[in-house]
Structure formats: C-alpha cells, structure tokens
Image 1 (cartoon, helix red, strand yellow):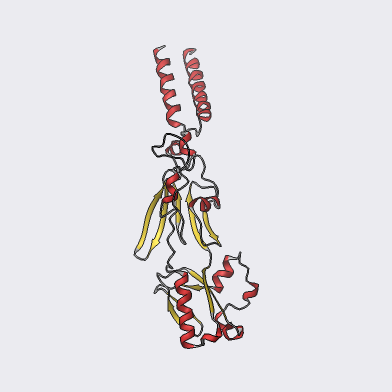
Image 2 (tube, rainbow, N blue to C red):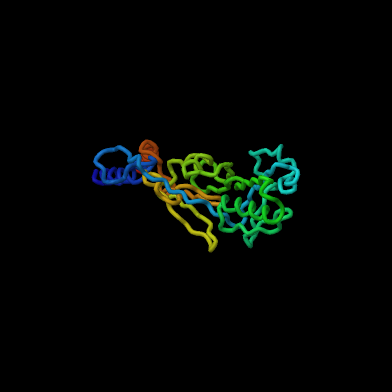
Length: 266
C-alpha cells in the first residue's frame, strides 16, 4: 500500500512538472506591480532608423522632367517590375559590397555603408546635380531596401527565410509570417541574432511581457535571425497539457499493473 501511495505521489509530481504553465503561453502580459490587469497603453515603441549593411540590396529610382536623360540609372523595364518578386528585386537592385559601396551607371562607386536610405537619396541627388544635371532638371531620387529579409528557426510553424516588402516589421509580425510559436516554444526568451559592422550580437525578447514593445529590438532589421528554443517539456517528451500528461501516466500505470499481475500469477 505504501508503495502504491509513493507511486501516486511520484506520478503526481511528474504531472505538475511536465505541464506547460498557462502563463507561459500568453503574449503581452502585464508583469509590473500593478494591482489590476489593465495594460499600460502609453508604452513607447522604440525604432531607430536602419543603417545600410554589407550585402543589403537597394532599389534606386531616379526621376526627372526629361525621363529619358535618367533612363540609364533605372532598371530596364521598371514599369513592369513585380513588387512581390524577391528575385526581380535582387537582379534589379544594387548590392552593397564588402567595402560598403554600390556601383551605379555613370556615377561609379558610392559608399552607403552606415547611411540611412534618406541619407543615400540626398547623396545621390547631390552627386547628380554636381556632375550631370542642373537644378532645373528637377531630379527626384528614391532609395528603398529591396525587401526586408530575415530567417526564423527553432520552434515556429514554418522555419525558413522570408522577404517582406515593407520598411517596418515588429517581432510579432515576423513570427506570424513563419507560423505561430507552438505551445512547446519558449516565448519568454526569443533570440534575435543581429548583424553589426563589427560582427553579430544575440539579443533576447520576452514576448509574454507587454513591455517588450519598449525594447530596441522589438522591430526586426534586414538579415536578422530569429531563434525560438524549445521548452524542456519537449526535450523530456512529456505531455504539453495536463490531459496529455494524465493520458501518458495512465498508460504507464496500466502497463505496470499488467506486469505486476502477470508476475504474481507465475
């Protein structure tokens, strides 16, 4: 009888430890010292202007009163450009080389490393006016990243690389585009591997905390790698919920009981 009680206690401990707590599955919780459950909506989102890195691809468009005079600076057949095609953007864009330069027709090499797209627009426009055109030509330059490319690995619905044609993507939008984080994914410690001129750094985000929106890493950047590690419950192979754990334990008890009965009848 004592052994049976100890077995029940042991199995109960397994049930408690193997279940994933409900609070670990909920996004954007208010984890402050507030005495109520209301979310502080006055959180300030932090997003610094993105500065161009090596291997980024830039789409440059130049317009003027006489469009034929700037046609050489624009991609051939740009009027048919399929904005949803990452391949077309790759071939029509200008790739930043290891020295931080892009090479444009008639302008040659232009250093863009560490500049924002607005800075690059002004830089190209200034060089065109100094070397090839007058103010009356009404030069208008636009520079955009050829899509925001990132990679998501680990416990996500569809691991892999994605290209989003937008300039502003937060961590929730990025994950939504590769599938939801399953119950077995650790939402409290999502890793962001980010490139910098001097190398890479790993940053952590707690997606269960509402104050994640105040993090400087809340918005992803081109070439970011998002990694969601599995919870220990998955590594142990135990149930994700209390019901699944109880089912597994009931199966084990049934096997043990059957074995005991067979043994006592020998």
